[in-house]
Image (cartoon, rainbow, N blue to C red; front, side, top):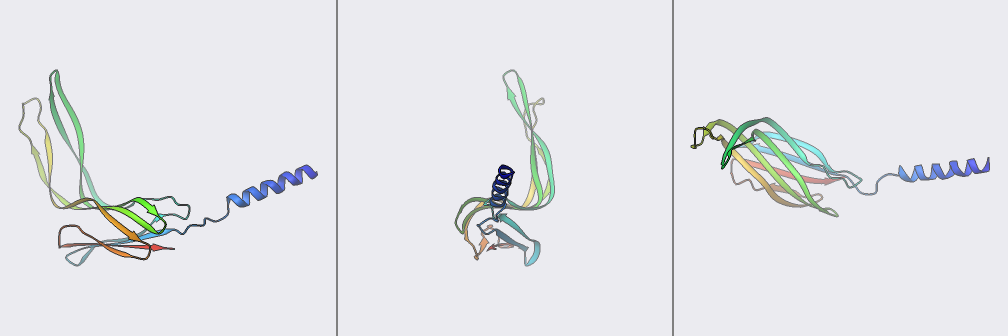
Length: 168
């Protein structure tokens, strides 16, 4: 009986230690995106949980359009299927975390499809390209500390993307 109680006490102690709360705070990212002052998107998401696991922030509305690329080879042709995102998308990836300092990479897309173009080539090897218009910015680096706000440079004065990193 004494052995059973000792084993039970050890099991309870290990279980309690394993379920003890995390010691690090979670971090949330508030994102506000506007076009000519009108809201495009606004959301809040946890980008780092109390256990130190990071998650990308992503909001999107649109479609992935398919197209084909053809390459002529000595013994035939090579066809490759590609995808092009068309619509609205904001994605924030955490690249590095050092205490309360985060290095982020931001992608912002607000595009519309204007058609497909077929490229010149041999009759048995024609490629396509999706034509788009609008904003398309990839992997803009942003360095932030908890409690700070940053405006992401998008290269278009009609758009404003603001990030706020909150510890809590």
